[in-house]
Amino acid sequence: MSFAFGVVLFALGILISVSLHEAGHMLTAKAFGMKVTRYFVGFGPTLWSFKRGETEYGLKGIPLGGFCKIVGMTPQDDDVEPGDEKRAMWRYPVWKRTIVMSAGSVTHFGLAIFAAWLAAMTFGLPNPNFPSTEEQFRSEPAVIALQDCVLPDTTYRACVTSDAPSPAATAGLLNGDRITSINGTPIANYGDLLTTLRAVSPGSTAQIGYERDGQTGTAETVLATTKRPPIDDPNGPVGDVAALGIGLVVSTPGLVSYGPVEAVGATSTFIGDMAVATAQALQRLPEKIPALWTAITGGERDIDTPISVVGASVLGGEAVANDAWELFIMLFISLNFFIGVFNLLPLLPLDGGHIAIAWFERARSWVYARLRKPDPGRVDYFKLMPFTYVVILIGGVFTLLTITADVVNPITLFPK
Image (cartoon, rainbow, N blue to C red; front, side, top):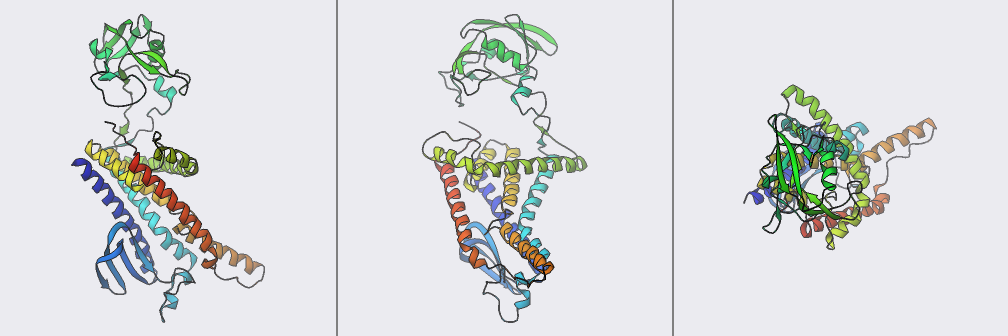
C-alpha cells in the first residue's frame, strides 16, 4: 500500500512541477502583455474548464503534463486575431521572449533549489567529504557492520536459509567493532582488511582481533566462501575467496543537516555539483542506448541507464515503502533539475530551440545592419520542420525505450 502511495505521490509531484512550468510561461507572457488564450493541466479531452478574461483554464483527461497557448509564438502562426497583431509573441523584444521561454526551466530550477534548501535543514544533503572512490573507501578505518549472511557470489539479494551465516556474527562481533588484526596480521584500515582476507583460505579458522568501546578483544570464527574478482581488477575472473560477512561503516556521515543560513551555501554547492553531473549525464546519453536495449532484451539493467517518468515514479514508490523519504526528495530534486536543463537545449521543439532562434535572428540582424544590408527578417519555422520532426522522432524513440526498460526490467534500489 505504501509503495502505491509513493508512486502516486511522486507522479503527482511531477505533474505539479510540469503544471508550474507552464504557469511560468503564462505568467511572464501576461506580465509583458502577450496574449495567452489557454492554460490546461493534462492532455486529451477536457474534463473541466472556465474562462477568466481572455484565458481559458482547465483540466484534461490524460494527466501527463500541461500546456499554455501564447498567441503568435512564431511569425508563421495563424492564431492571431485582428487587433491582436501587436500582442503576438514574435513581435516582442528578444529579451522578453527569452524570459518567457526560459520561465519554465527557471521554475524547475526554483523547485529543485527550494526542495534542496528544505532537505538541507531536515534530512540533510550529501556530505561532500563522504568517500567517493575505491581508494578513499579502502583508507577508512575497518569499522564493521554485520551482514545477515554471506552471499555465494556478487549478485545482491536477500538472504535465504541456504546461505552461509555471517562468520563475524557467529564469532560474537558487533556493529561498530573495529577490526585490528586477522591471524596476527595488523589491520590499519578497510583496505588492509580486504587484502588480508584474500590471503586466507576460504573455510579456514581465523583469529580476529578487534576493538570495542576502547577495549580490545579477540574472537575465533570459520570463514565462509564467496566468489569475487581480484581486488586490483574488478572486471577480472571471479574466484573463491574467504568472507567474514561484514560491511564497512564509513566514519563520515552520508548526509549532513544545516541551519537555515548555512543551508543556503550548502544548497549552492549541491546544485553546482548537480549541474556538473547533469551535463556529464547528457553527454553520455547516446552511449546508454545499447545498455537500454540490452535491459529490454533480457540482459542485466545497468543502474546508470536513463529512466523515464515511469521509472522515477517506481523509485519514488520504493523510497516511500522503505521509509527513505530523503531518497524521495533527492529524486524529486534531480528530476526537476534535469528537466530544467534538458528543456533549455537549443533544439526545436524545446524551449531552448525557440530561445536559440530568437537570438540567432537578433545576431543576424545586427550583422546585416553593420554591413548596411536590409534586415533578413524572421526565421521561417516551416523550413525547420524536417529537423524538428527528426528531434521529435529521436526523442520519442528514446522515451519509448526508457519506458519499456522501466516496465520489463526496472531499476530497483531496494532488492528483495
